[in-house]
Every structure is written in structure tokens, then in C-alpha cells.
Amino acid sequence: IQTDIPSVKDTVPFTLGTTVARATTLGEHGQLLTKHFESVTPGNALKWDATEPTEGQFVFTDPDYLVDYAQQNGLEFRGHTLAWHSQTPDWVFKDGDRALTSSPEDKALLLSRLENHIRTVVGRYKGKIKVWDVVNEVVDENQPDGMRRSPWFQITGYDFIRTAFRVAHEVDPAAKLVINDYNTEFPRKRVALFNLVKKLKAEGVPIHAVGHQLHMNIEQAPTAEVEKTIEYFAALGLDQQITELDISVYTDFVSSYTTVPAEVLALQGYRYKELFDVFRRQASRLSSVTIWGLADDSTWLSTFPITRLNPPLLFDDELQAKPAYWGVVDPA
Ligand code: XIL
Image (tube, rainbow, N blue to C red):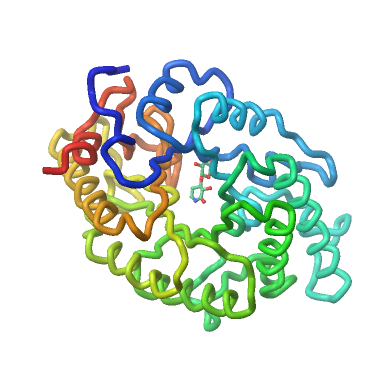
């Protein structure tokens, strides 16, 4: 890795984080991680399908490794995520072969599974994982009530959210509890999430921060809308975090390059600069900014939404600084 360039974390007035997909053999990626970042979110290791693939049988090999690594290297740790509709095993929403319904019995069963899961996972890392994405992607702005029709919502209504925050807070009262979602830079989604958080706060649900994923692309004119979102949510009096930032080089779901043109990487660098200008201006409202990956050799966008070359991060396949890196550290 390049050691003679500024550490990104030293150039920003908030905690800078990244995600790592694999738990083992961090090697050179570990050097890049500790030089430039001060927080880490596991990409998959704490999702339900990884931690409790079978009811009551927990697997903590990967998160244990990562949490230890973070502690030894002075990195903060973000837990991601406790209740989501994706990467959740089928058994969670079933009783044997039968799909759970919204009957009182089924609802109680699902909420007790959720409670047990959270007690076990949050309890294991109490005091070590200080921030949790408690619920992920629960909003659907196209529904009249703004709520995603996930099995969680269809079986329990709002109660899975209430239970998740209540139990996480009971188990680790010092942990910062986040409600996390994507597309919050778009006006309708912004309003739907805001209204949900406002309602839950009024009920006394212990939500401490709003997480904006911020999966962007190079064409999206992000600056003004992202800033509006941060200012809009400030009215809730809650901390905010950017939780999964990356900038796709595509503006649609079908294009595919064999090599990405230099001018596209330059434009991406400019987009990172614009965004970090916003984050620096809004630093009093943002406790952390997490970039969803260390380097372009490992990004979810190489398979989502289709398999294609898509380098969305600050460092390239060889772990070398890209225009995106310079856009962040040298915004002049
Ligand atoms: C992604 C991971 O990065 C991939 O490795 C995995 O295959 C799919 O999930 N929103 C989220 C993250 O909240 O958990 C997702 O992470 C990306 C979109």
C-alpha cells in the first residue's frame, strides 16, 4: 500500500469507517484499513443468516475475529444488522413448513425469536460494539403508510421495530441504536423515514441515530439533496451517520465497461469531493461516515444488480489511491 499519502481519517472531522466483507487474512487490506479508517462495519458477518442460520444455534467465528481485530487496532465497530428482510433464514418466518401469519400466536412467536436473537448477539458484544444498525430498510415510500411489506411488518406491524430497539437498549444501554435506510436523499423516502422516526420517538422507542446508506452513482446530482436530507433530519434532534457510501460508475442497471474510462473515474472523484464538502459542512450533525468497502477488488457492486466491472471506492484493485481518494483528502 502507499504509505506516503495522507490518511483519509486525518482529513475529516468525523469518524471515518469502512466495511470488510471477509473476516480472515486481512493482510494488506488490514494495512489499508488501519492507515485510513477508524471504524469498521462487517459487510455480512453479523447478518441473521450468518449468526443464527438454524434456530438457537449461533455462529460467531467471523464477527469474533473482526471484533478482536478492531479492538487490537483501535478501530470502532458498527454492528450491522439485527432485523432486515434480506439475508434472513427462512425458518425465522415459518413454523415447520407453514408460513407465519399475523395471528396473535404467530406474532408472539416471531417477536420472541427476534428478542432471543438480539439478546444473544448484542449481549455477546456488549461494550465492544458501540453502534448497532438495529433495523434496516423498513421504509417503502410507495405504501400508503410508508412501511415496507416485509414478513416482519406483515406479521407484527410496527412491533418488530419497537421490540428490536427495546431489547437492544435493555441488553446494552450504552450502545448507540440506529435506524438505517437507503435512498434517503430522495424527497419521498426522506419524508417517509422522518415520519416513522418521529412517531416512534414520540412513543419513547430508544432510537439514537438515523443512518443514511447513500449508495450513489456518478450522475446523481447528490450535493443539494444529501444536504437537504441531513438538515431535514436535524429537526428530530438525533445523531446521523452515513453508513454505506459508494459511488457506482453507472447510472443504470444494464451498462457494462470492459475498462472504465479515465474521465469517468475523474468524475467519480469530483462526486466524492462534492459529497465530502457536504459532510464537512454538516459535521456537527454527523458522527460517522462509512464507505461501503476498502478497495475496488471487493465491492458488492461487482455482482449487484448484475455482474460487471464497477469500481465505486477510494482505492483500486491494487489498493492504490484513485481520483476518488484525492477528491476526499484534497477537496480544494
Ligand atoms: C451487501 C453486502 O455488501 C454484500 O456482500 C451482500 O452480498 C449483500 O449485501 N444495503 C445494506 C447492506 O444494508 O447490508 C448490503 O450489503 C448493501 C445494501
